[in-house]
Structures are given as C-alpha cells and as structure tokens.
Length: 129
Length: 500
Image 1 (cartoon, helix red, strand yellow):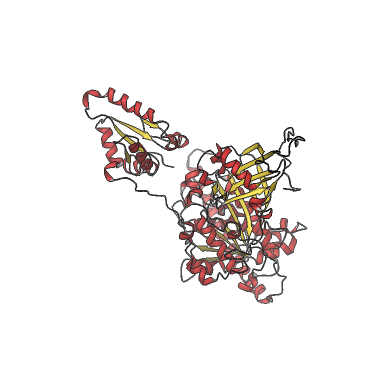
Image 2 (cartoon, rainbow over the protein chains, first blue to last red):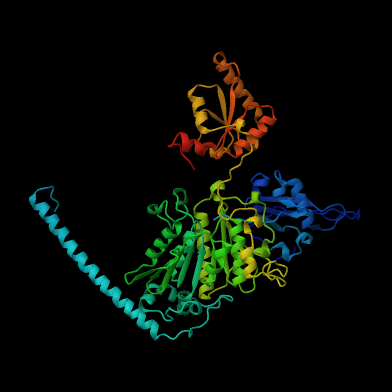
C-alpha cells in the first residue's frame, strides 16, 4: 500500500526482493514486511512484538493482499490459541489492523495490496484502566 | 537556645504555644472574614453579569455550560488571572482558552488508574464543573497507580477520596467552599474558588442513570476498566451528542482516542462486534505498570482540555498507541464514522429509550462491575477446603501439592513444599508429577498403604479445577483441588500469608 507515513524508525536490512525471472511467466514475489503485534496479541507469537519477515506471494499471483498475509501469519507466526487472532478469514473482533499506520478499513481491508517494506500492525483493543 | 527540661524551658514552651494559639484564632477569624467578602464579591459579580454573551465553545455539538448552568462568571477574576497566568501567557491558549475552560463541564467515569491523573489535571487547570463517577472503594493495591487517592482513604469510596484530593488541589488562599447536599445524598456539590465545582456520583454507571448524569456535562472521559462500560458510555455519548475522550491501559501498553467528536467515529464504528471475553484482560489478573495508565490518563486530560478550551486539534479519527517497554508512541489514522454503525450510522435510530433498555452485559458477555470468576467444574469429592488441607499437613499425610499458577506468580509467594507446574505446561510436565508422587510414597512407605495424595492449588481456585480435570483425564484419579486457592488459605488458615 502506498503511504507517505512509512515508519522511518524501522531499519531495513539489505533489499533482496526477487526479480521477476525472464524465463518464466510464473513468478512468485518475495516481499519483505515488518509485522508488529500489540495489546496482548504478541503472546500468541512467543511474546515477540516485532517480526521482520519475507513473505512469498501465493502461486502465480503477482501481488500480496492482506488476505494472503493473514493466512501466512496464521500458519507461520501464531503459535497458540489461533481463535484469539482469527475469526473466519479475517481477524477476530477487537483487533485493529494498521497498514503503514493507517486503519485497513481505509485501504480495503482483506483486499489491501501490500508493497515491499510495508509495516503491518495487529493490535488488540485494551479495556483496562 | 534549646533547654533540656527545667522550669524556664517549660515556661518558654507554654508561652510560645499560647501565642501560636492566639495567632491561629486571629488567623481563622481573618480567613472567615475574607471568605465572606469573597462570597459577597462573587454574588455581586454574578448578578452583574449578563448571561450568554460569551463566545461559543466549539467543542463539537455539545451545549455550553452557560446553557446548562447559569451561575458561572464569564470574566476572569483577578484571582483567576493570577492562578491561571501560565495558561494565559500561552499565545495559542490565552484568555479565550482559559475562559472557555472555566465555562466547561467534564465528567470522568472511573477514578482508578486513568481517572486519577486525569482528575488531578482537570481539577488544577480550572474546568468549571468536574464530575466523578465510581462505585468502588480504595484498596491498598490501587495505590501504586491510582495517585489521586491517599492511604487515609483506604476502605472508603474512591469518589470521596478523589473529590477530597481535587478540592485540595484547586483550593487556594482565596477559596471558599459551599457544600450543598442534594436530597438523593448521592451527589455532593462543592463550589471551590467560585469557578470549580466538583460533583460526586458514588454509584456505578448503568443504563438507568447514565443519560441523566452524562447529559449534565459537555465532555465525557472514559476511564473505566471493562468492555460493557465502554460500549455503554460510547452509545450514551452518541445519543446525547457528547464528545468522548477514551483511554485504556494494561500491562505496559496504552491506547487513546477521541470518539464522537465533530462527525468522527464512535466506539462502535471501530468495534461493531464485542471481543471474546477471553480477550478482555484485567489489571488485577494481568498486572499494569502504574505509570502507564498515568501517562494515558494525563493525555486524556489534555484531550479533554483541548476540546473544552477549543484550542488545538483533538485526537479524533486518529488513535495513539503507547508501548512503554520499547518507548514508542505511534499515532495511527483510523476509520471515520461508519454509515452502517448501529448506533451513530445514517440509518440508525438508536434512541434514548433503546439505550435504557439495552443489555450491555449480555451484548459483551461480561459484567459491568467485574467480580473475580468463580468456576465450579468439579464434583465435591474432587475438592477439599484450605482448612481440610491444613489438617492433612498437620496429620503428616503423604501427599504432593502442585501449584499451577504461572511461574512469575509462584515467585510472589507459594506454600512450602509445593511444586510449580503452570497450567499451560501441565500436560508436558506430567512426568515430574509422577516422579514427585513416587518419591513421596517411597519416603513414607511405612505409614501409608494407599499411596500419596495429589492436591492442586492456584490463586483463586479456578485454574486448579481445570488442572484437576486434566490430571484425572490423564490417569491421576486421586487429584483434588483446594477450593478458593491461596486466597482462601490466606483467609481461613494463615492470615499473614501475602495476597496479591
């Protein structure tokens, strides 16, 4: 997703995006993303809040959507109580999803297209006080 | 010169004491006369003032305090000029900002970790009328974060304690206090320095009283600690058209935003469906670093002050996320008002009557005034009381005690000779329990023929039941839980046992 408000504090290691192969029409992009979990969701991924990950686009797809990312996160990062993260094919009620510091409702929710070095935050709303 | 005893020393002391006494009497007489004169001055000024002349406070669409409450000065008194001079010196705030503030009314729901700092700053800054709602009493384990309360008020209503502190904050040399006890005796009005009024609501906010209370204020600050209250307060603010400054804190994180401000989203636009109850952690279970709600509460006061004074840009349509551990504050853009919102949306017809009848506890499957959970999963013969367990120890019964609390709880306090196997790891660590039972049996083989018993304990007696269910399923048929956990041990057996 295009955004001016990219988090500048995130250090990005060497850019190693896979270039499209000239020999094949079937190409799978590898995208470097920063995923952050907060408001207790980090407990579902071994208490690690910030994850720098490389995600492949699904077979033959030329883009990576939030829907693809959610399924990747469920498979690769969520280690326990998956029902605390997902409900159906989206996040459970009470979880805010932010793509480059912007509510995913404003960028198309599950259909949001992700771009290299995007920062995606999953945060559970707090009720304490 | 200091004298250690002796007639002349005693005479000196008594002379000084008597002089102090005389001066104190004179001082209190002067103070009383000043008070009287100030009250006369205030009455004269109020009568001389013509209502409704001032500029509107552009805080969304909420009514001006002057429209609700007529007994407010429009101009800053000389005392106010001096007291709020540092506000007046701010070019962007100035006389207009302070004047708006003095005419505004703010309701803080919850006098806990968030409400404490919010109330302190709101009382000090010169909000015209400050309401406090809370049904709870002050406890020792509140003190590390609920900084508005003092030890002297432990066991007393939080509202009373918070109001007393707020009054002392805004109480100056020129203050006079007039208390009017309302017929309901639930609300005590106290006017301080002719501009600040503190109103106490020593009751839980419910659908039955929320409309009446909230309608008397320009701005509402949500400083509560549970999901049903948050939905209820937001809905009530929508129905009444009040801006809502919402804050939350837990553990080492905090969140802040302004709802229902100038066409912005409400709580339900963001969270149309309540979260599962298991996702609603509480400070009393998960812990909270005291300063974290302190920071969020201060920011709530700031947002409320900005709206009340009509200065600056409120945090509407944006949310502040605070992570204390990594020292990061992130401000994100959130969705606008949802046209499909069931309460504030275009087609919504959510009325005051519907609000009154709405069951927020059912909607969120959580109680408005949460009490600790008390499960009852096991038959009576799978449970023993803490007193019975004490007898078994005294009789030297051969047994193993498994404490299934998380390791960091176990470090706070534990019973002697208990072994810590957290519930989350129970299945994986069954061999440890088998081993402990075997050792116990070998050790006391001569005076027992039925093997060692297995008891399970936790903090309050819920996880211990879950653990016993699991253990019995895995073949440990004799496993039994200690009813009420360590809390009941502290209550019924060992009063000096630390509780948390």
